[in-house]
Amino acid sequence: MINLNTKEKDLQYIMHTYGRYDVALKSAKGATAFDEDGKKYIDVSSGIGVNSLGYCDDGWVEAVTKQAGTIQHMSNYFYCSQASNLAEKLCNLTGLAKVCFGNSGAEANECAIKIARKYSFDKYGEGRNEIITLKNSFHGRTVTTLSATGQDVFHNYFFPFTEGFKYVEADTADNFKKAVSNKTCAVMIELIQGEGGVNILDKSYVQSLVKYCADNDILVIVDEVQTGVGRTGKLFAHQNYGIMPDLMTAAKGLGGGLPIGVCMCGEKLKDVMSPSTHGTTFGANPVVCAGANYVIDKVANDEFLNEVEAKGKYLEEKLASLDGVKSVRRMGLMVGIELENGDAHDIAIKCVGNGLLIITAKSLLRMLPPLTITYSELDEAISILKKTINENKTA
Ligand SMILES: *Cc1c(COP(=O)(O)O)cnc(C)c1O
Image (cartoon, rainbow, N blue to C red; front, side, top):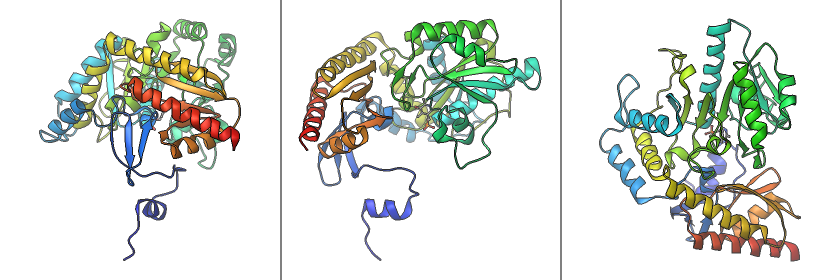
């Protein structure tokens, strides 16, 4: 048998749905990772906002290993304290009323879409099922969440897509109102479009949209899969906007590195779903919930969240003063960097070569560092980026 290395095996046996960086990570701690050759990297991507407490946080590791050795899985036919404790915390911290558990962001959004449509079906009957989403949004990779995603590039190959989605530019509330019809049951938005280019929605736009929806019984679904769990300097981004969603989804950073998705709803919707209308085998898994409980306990306090914002501000100021950086968009530790020249993807590959794990969002570089990143790790990240931009200029 030929002895294949990690990359060769990957290319031979794993479907090629990702263009990977040329790195095989082996071990990591905090915001520092090492590859199979022992080379060191500063990670400002945290697995796309997943490792919210960084790699292998001691308390998190202890919480999940303890739970793995106590009871690792039970079906949803039994009550689970890790899940009910997590649900209680999430409700108390948001003012929302109930949680439905799943395993990913896309699944959480599917759940929100189902709840919105069933609410409208129960109350108004058939036909009022249209959901408006925003251009440039990203809501997931299932057939329905691809449909919900307001970017034409995602609407290929897999026809027929789920019907009943309409897309509007995130510009004026009037434009949104024009798209509303007597078939509209919900609007689904990211407050900061992550994959779409770190586009921060205007506060007054969001507030007037939410007000209009409340007046017309159109449900507001806020997709906080990327913006949730401290990422923006509040526990959830909608708390920066002074709004209350009818439905909110969260996933990426919630489990601290384990797969979880939640769909939460307010009082009005808390009894829409009944037994057998939704479910998932792995949802509310005790080990995953133990990790999420640990993350929430750590993140959901002012001291921690103020520190996220302080680090974000520090990072923004340093980045904005770099030669070659045109502008910086940021909320908390969710950062988009617009370059003066050079292709962001190409620069990201060069950064990785120089020891900085960074990602892109459209034509921007994107940073989603672990919320626990230290100032010295931030300084290291900035200096590698600076060096890479300079090398690129002279190359
Ligand atoms: C990543 C992401 C999703 C999809 O989450 P998965 O866990 O990959 O299914 C949905 N919405 C937003 C805003 C995201 O950033």
